[in-house]
Length: 75
Image (cartoon, rainbow, N blue to C red; front, side):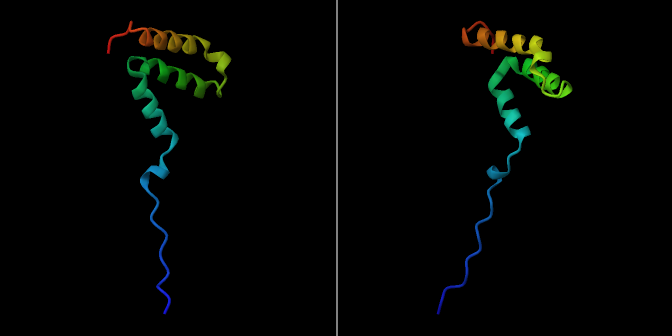
């Protein structure tokens, strides 16, 4: 007699992560630069993802990240 058919395994929660979860993780990794990152994200949403419109925010985030890499930021 054949064994009963097996049900497919339930999908794990990690397969259902959305962009918001990814953004949250990115913000955590940015540490003290997180507010600048969020400002950039908001600018991109408001400008329909037009990077040229958000250069002020891009440069501020870049400066913060460089400062953090060089040990100039406080944690």
